[in-house]
Length: 144
Image (tube, rainbow, N blue to C red):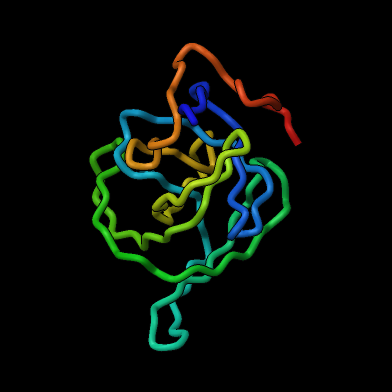
């Protein structure tokens, strides 16, 4: 099966986190994927570090989703402004255009950013990016 072609912004779902729809920016300039998270809290489950966090999957809407996932790693990430931040990293499946694959996502505060999620290069194993297009997989900026 060939790669799915996506635009520079798309709607995706993260089924393991209970997120049916989240608008993301496909960013070939970013190495790591990131998702907007707040109220981030680490805890232990079966001798493994887990993280519980809240997010607003749809920008400018009050709906809050609370997610839990094992912590895969903690990494220092440099944002586009040159600021370094240690972030928890989780592994979860993304569903994009009916295709699913595991991706690593860092948790960070993206409240002031236009997109709740950024898809970085390391998560682009199953896609080809058409940078002049948007929402090639359906939906539009107003979905849902």
